[in-house]
Length: 454
Image (cartoon, rainbow, N blue to C red; front, side):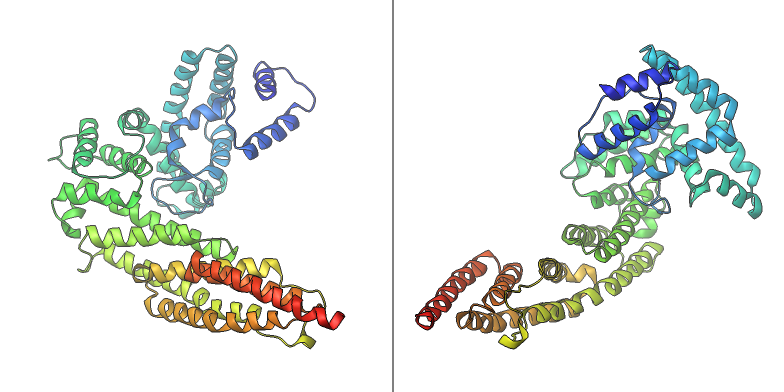
């Protein structure tokens, strides 16, 4: 309510000291809470509304086809308002804000439509003006202020030019598709073809964009986005890449491969940050398997080479992490003499959590080894972990059984860590048996100390 009141005052031209600072903090609080809030829009939000389905929370230099990074919107809007069409953006923006303040949604939509049309024309003129002049392209990139400026404004203008058709696609597509089979594929193709030229004709650039951006919207509604490939193979009536490439729906394969590349990039970041990656590995595995199952990628083609390069990159990324895991566990679980243990010390909880996460990571790589191209190293490392935990845990239990007051906390923490690792490797039942064995060992240790104290 406070946000709405403050925004309404700004739209009416009321200058309240500190209102922008207060709004900034309130908006951050709302975002952090994850709770939706009714907001009075402004010209920028209405202007970018058609782009919302294609926004991603990636870095601004991402390379996902047909997508815009959300962080790029602000610099693009500043470029439009400052350099591209300052007078028109200011006048129409103020008119839109007044319409919103008066709760006149129809008027605001009409004004936004006018703003879109002028922006489309001006952006096309700006792109055409630079042409092949590399110096002019660099100058425009600096003005826009995003790492992939020309691609960003090109994507923006392509979306805005077909915003009505894309709104119709969004309205008529199911909100969620658990499976994408022949019946659903025929429905989607009929929808696209109703918005474009007949299928027998070569698609114009506008029609190709309707298919591309429509497929992106569809992919976001699929439970398994890799199934988007099926519309391409269905349209070609073949799994041969050459036949698929001749259809307008070849864009589906490019979208899926692009998403796979994005997931590999995200995987690299998550591994560096030491965060869980099991769901990412599953997604990459399913996508690679889907591509190889739905299409004949055994023959040489740009798509088969792209997937092969991606799997090679993935293998190199995963191999080092997989091979480092047994060493991490050994350093934590290594049997120590009483002299090596400081009285009352325990294993570092962060180190244990990271080692547990890596153990689960190796398990996921072992499960998905074939498509991740890490068969040999994953199988070998998984067997090594199994053997080490089977033999090493017995040693730790025996050490706990004979521990004294000073080293018992440390030995107990080693056993507890081993139980967590065993749960990741052997399952909950096995870990449950170890918990009982650890309780018996701890009780035996306490019993042995009593006569000494007496």
